[in-house]
Structure formats: structure tokens, C-alpha cells
Amino acid sequence: MEKTAVRFGIKTTPMHVSYEDIRRVWLEADAVTEIADAWLWDHLLPVAGPGDGQVHEGWTLLAGLAAQTERLRLGLLVTSNRVRPPALLGKMASTVDVISGGRLVLGLGVGGTRQPPGAGGIPGANPAIAEYAAYGLPLVPPAEGIERLAETVAILKGMWTRDVFDFEGRHYQLKGTRCAPKPVQRPGPPLLIGGWGTRLLRLVAEHADIWNVPGPPHNSVEYVAERARVLDAHCAELGRDPSGITRSVQVLVSYDEPAAARETVGRLVDAGMNHIVLNLPRPYPRGVARWLADEIIAEPHSTHVGAARPRITA
Image 1 (cartoon, rainbow, N blue to C red):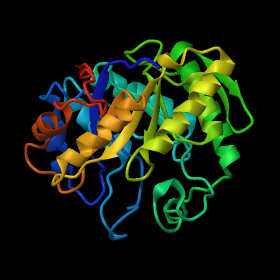
Image 2: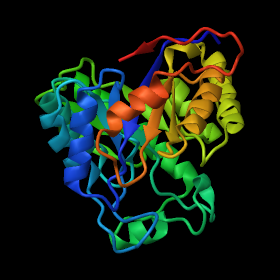
Image 3: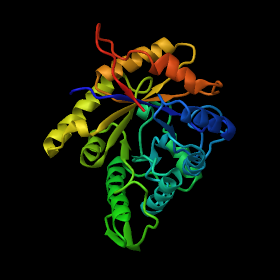
Image 4: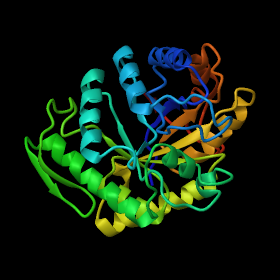
């Protein structure tokens, strides 16, 4: 696949960190044009570190940050489809798109399902078990999670494009749903779907503008490349041009070893990924956005000797 321009974002995981620190990093990044977008996540309890640590709710935090930034595109990597009813999510997303002046990217994932220990590259028991029990949310089998996500996508598109909307699905039913104001972006915010399972990648090929997958250290570059080939195969079966889907990957940054991050980014770009989200460890140093631009984003991102440096767009 021919490479396209490489775009960079940052991710501030709102766990064991203060609102003030997250806000500071986002405002710094808003002034650094090499950074195109900024992301939160969607968990209600810590998935690492002390279990009694603070975690900010993703969508309310996103709305607050949307009101204070001016340039960054923004969203959650990714919204759990199990936490909010689809029509409520559609209403929330419309509101945040209005607040941001049309900068929302709607990141969606299946959410908590019944998974074995170690799933998703996170050691130990499935963290969703405790999290969903604490908030009264049932876990569902993975196949049902995919079905529900597909219905949510249909509901969102209906809410954003129709004045009055009915929906009759296996898992969700709506009657006389209205969504006003509509999103600033028409027909709606870009849809990002995150995940790597084969059935999930079929849904990406059918509906998504952007595909996101966790990269190192959770998934190897080789595994990300293999999953991209699965997505390509789904696109071929559906008659969709695979280059129309942005390939997005998350990379954990080390402040002590930026060269390692540069090398990993280069390998991912060579594998066809064209949106790199730099996941920031806590605590966040002051000036971290400018540091990322100078130490990681500004470097050539190809492991091929003599290869041209990809064009970076914001």
C-alpha cells in the first residue's frame, strides 16, 4: 500500500493524574502544530497501579478540554460501547462536536467482554470484571459485543442525519429519537473503531474512517502489520479501497529513551501505519508537547536506508 502523510497525536490516560496536569498538557499541545490530535480513554477504575487511585470520566473531561482548546482534533481511544446507551452517546458526541467547533473524532470500541487473563496485552485478570461489577455493567460474550457495536454505529448515523429516527435492532430499540443540535461536522464526526479481532476488523472495513490498534508494548509491530493485512482482505471482499481508512496505532513513549520511540515509530510507518498516537507516561513533564515534536515527531520515520522522510501534517 502506498504511504500517505503521517499524522501524530498524543494520549493522556486520565488515571493517577490530576485534571490540572492533563489540562496543562492539552493546552501545550494545542500550541504545537506538529501534534494534530489529543486523546483520553474510557475507564472508570484504574487498570494499573493502586486500585483506589483517581480516574476521571472520559466524556465529561473531553467536553471540558474541548471548550479550552482551539485547534486539536480530539476524542477517546476508545469509548466503551458497554457504558452508555447508543442514543445517549450520540447526543453526547453531538454536543462535544458543537462545543469544539467541529473537532471531535468519535472513537468507539466493543468495551468490556468476557475475556481470558492477559487479553489485550495487559497482564493478569481481565480488568473489566472488577470495573463493570463496580458500576453495575454486565459483561457480554465477544460476539454479542460486536453485534452491539454494529447497532450503535447504525444508530449514530441515523441520529446525525435524520430529524426523527426509529431503530429496531436485536439489542437496541428506539422510537422517535431526535438529536438537535446536530454535529457541526456533516454527516457526522469521523468514526474511529479500535481493536484487532478479525470480526471487529470486518466492522472497521464496513464503517470506519479510522482504525486504531495498541502497538508496542501491548502488541508487536509484526502483529499490527498482520492485523492490517486482515483489514485489507476485508476491504477487498467488500470492494472498499483500503487506503480510505486511516491506520492509527498507539505507542508508549519513554522520556528517557526517545530514540527507542523513534525506531518503533519508523517500523510502524514502514508497516503502513499513518497515524501515530504517542501515549504519555505519568507524570507529565512541563513542556512535554514541544519535547515530543522535537525529539520524536521531527525525526525521519523510516527504517529503510535512504528512504525519504514522510511528510508530517497537522
